[in-house]
Length: 336
Ligand code: AMP
Ligand code: MG
Image (cartoon, rainbow, N blue to C red; front, side, top):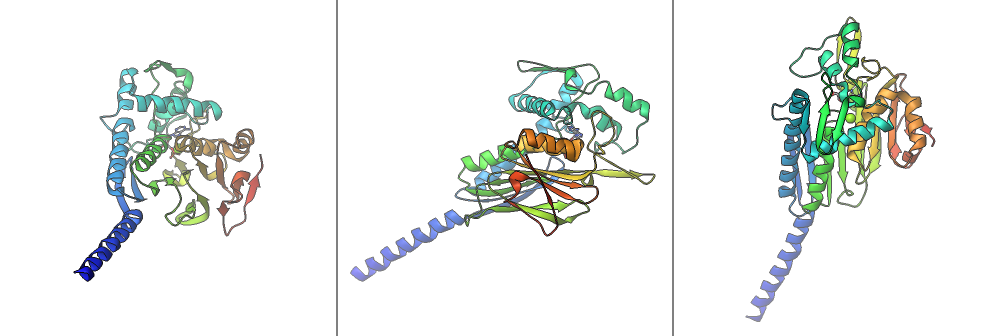
């Protein structure tokens, strides 16, 4: 009898040890399509299945709310009505976009919508090269001076429209990371197209390594960054473009000229604990080019880190990334 009880006790102890180890190491992976791109979440920790479900649901909710390509979108309604009381998420993003526009001296600008439309970079349109006149006309409604924010109400000038496509994925990855953390996830890797977000460190306690795509062949990498609890966001002309008469036209527009940015960069990766800022800055630095981006970094080295790849295939990294960037290629350091 005594022996039986001992075996039983041992079995219970084994079971508790085994199950708690399972709980700690439990891993959940999910792949889905949202915000016009393939997304994946890999999460570790107790209850990760429920947490990943909730994060996926939140990303889909934000997609419906913010994408101007969805009939349910508040942004689409604002563009149509020109004045609307916005929900908290949309309002927050419009004001984050305004901050980004100020610090990048207008390189990031959500009012580029009429230009993105003229170039046909929305899925219902065909890509085309607009006439100079069309671009001049569209430019008249571009700029934050055409947006008025009063309390929760946002008003747009008559021909102004906004597009949060350059910042929404950053906001979504931050929200998804918060949901995972609040629901027992201790480490996770969230990938929303060009936007990667890490939660904590890897389950073994080491840093996550996030590869930076080679803009000439995105199946390869130009280097890697070691990070924890950070967003790693890449923008580049190679991500969406069309070719006409031997010219390549991509989707990141210089709000000052109305043409695809031609700043001498092939791609920009921004690393920051603030996902929304990282998303806005990766788009903006791509417009600004190497010199202006370096100036912005020198003034705000605490705000972000970056990896920039130039048209002539040189790699530049900000100094605050020196200990966490590795590459088989040569690279230069931008000092603050
Ligand atoms: P991203 O992929 O984050 O660099 O954002 C590119 C998307 O943002 C484009 O597809 C447009 O919808 C929008 N966009 C294009 N140019 C700009 C710009 N200069 N500022 C803000 N958003 C932009
Ligand atoms: Mg962006």
